Length: 384
Image 1: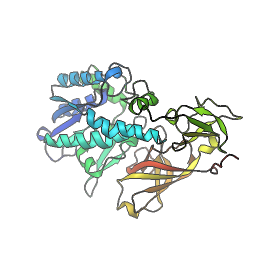
Image 2: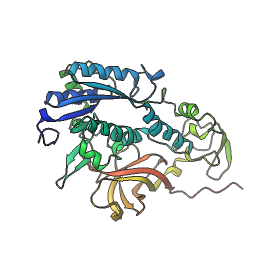
Image 3: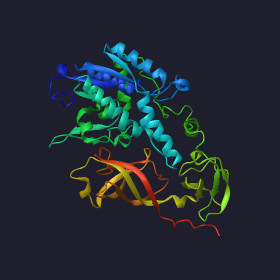
Image 4: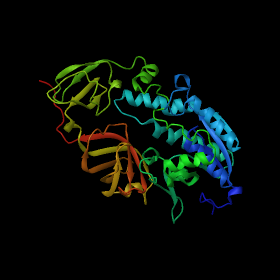
């Protein structure tokens, strides 16, 4: 077995590397080339670069394609740029807009990994007779004794990206490799310098690639100019506190910019797209211990429908550590997560990643999309 747990010797093993133009994927390409693999770099053009072409901190911006091309040239590997704009728009951007208009808080990076990167790009890698597709994600992949591979949290907890990759299927995991899963960002940048890569100090991307200034509402207005409608801002009892210009301007858990005042700090508790209402209340109204999931991807042992009250750990936001919970999966593929302690700010449309435990190297058991959040507080009643 070679360094990537593949049966052929490195010099007989072709690996396609998804090169985003950042330091991480460029280091992966350089590292595998140094280890003797037949490396082919591929960069995806996902959207009309426009205003984001030279914006510092953007993800997948136009300059990134130039950086990926320069890195491939320096490493002396073949490099291809593929126009995936139509696929990305249909699979990610349009779905993002629809989800926001439905009062949800979507995470487009999960959908991009699920479709464009780990479905379409993986298919391309196979068409190129590759033995594996490698990426610069900070997540670990390990062979299972009975065959197949398991997904684990990365060595560096501050860089761990497993939350965004829970939707990776078992079949995809068998073909994917993540060489940075056992490295820290400091080690990656040091290796970039050792490889002579000019982007060794390039800042990490921070924003969603197709949101030019980090304003989601601008994207929605461009895609669905007639969809947003004004409505009322109400308290938990249904009393009108003010008005808004569209629920797309709000997310569950938001405190700033509400434009209404109360006797205590107010937060967005719920969005009601059917009535165009923004429901606000105290922070305690955000607390929940029960979450319903759909679009479940199961990577654990045994059939999903056999899971009943399984002790697990879950992450309901990428910035939060895994929390103890129990998991039950229904015959229709939906799942119920019961948290041991309340969490706040959990919103429909977000991702819930499921782990075997809350340890730093925990195995990813899958995850799903949050569809329903049962608040601990009483349901609101209509105003008299």
